Amino acid sequence: MSTVRRSRTFDYDLYLHDGTALTASASGTVDSAAVVLDLGTGFVDADLILDVSALDVANGDEIATVEVRLSDTQIATEVYVATQYELGDSAVVSGDVDRTTGRYIIPFNNIVEDGSCKRYMHLYFTLAGTIAAFTATAYIVKK
Image 1: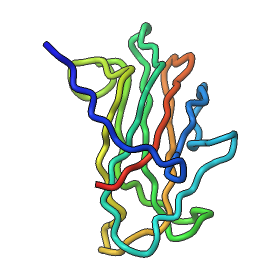
Image 2: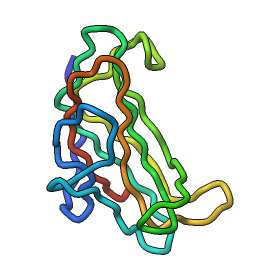
Image 3: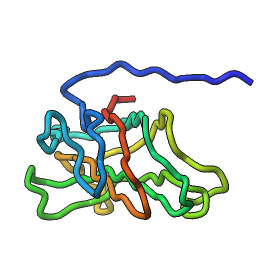
């Protein structure tokens, strides 16, 4: 069986996390600074490219949730979760297969429940269980 690695063009301006290892829940960072992207005022249909290089699931209780969060302001006072994706041990994530290292392509858009487009976005990683470290890079690409 062959593996297909879907490639996408990387744009540094759309970089959301630079691979810094996380040991606790945190926002995506690049060069140690939290990243908030300005998507503009219109509709954005995009993919989050998440390349996970380290996520140990040896204890059976590890879970890392990645959220694409939207807001009207750079300092998010009202946050909408556009999408979330769970990685970790099959005992605690949906499905019956461990989701650990590899490339994950997660679709999202910036429209929320009331039909409005949210201008700003950032990533948030929630870590639970006995995760020693979670390491990934993340960026977005338009479809």
